Length: 196
Image 1 (cartoon, rainbow, N blue to C red):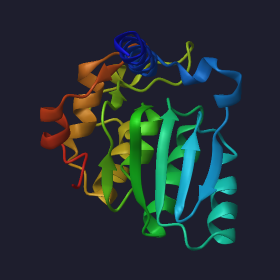
Image 2 (tube, one colour):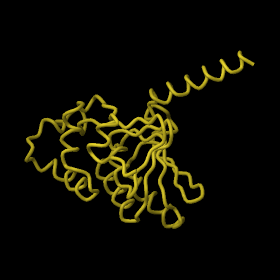
Image 3 (cartoon, helix red, strand yellow):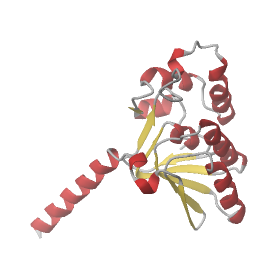
Image 4 (tube, rainbow, N blue to C red):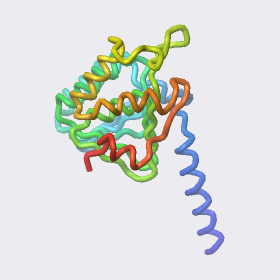
């Protein structure tokens, strides 16, 4: 019995550690967002891309009873415009967002999460933020002056979602485009990331 209990504890620790190091974008099945409807919840995993707003709208029209989007592993977006468009649709529909236990969201995935009217999370969650970047040829966010027009769409989005604009400047400062910062409980509270 002790051996079985010990084995289960080791397995649990391995799963927990794996979830923290999960790189969704390097898993073929998560290179694109996958949606799964269960009861009044829409489960979401994968990288947000240009087709995501269209697919999300089609699903929400087909299943109007959906109340909450449960984010499992959403490491970011390959198309920021599409991400903001999909996120705006979430807020327009009055949906809630929830990060599943041991879930991971980062970059554009974190921005998408902020669209929820109510924003909650399970245990052992990773919420990553960093300065945005377009591609290797273009400058990253921290290279533009604060009054540059490139910042405006993000500042406007955070304002619409009721998130303090100081959060945007925090994301640019806390980690470079090629890095990632896992938000602390104090930071989640300071920037009103969760509603409950």
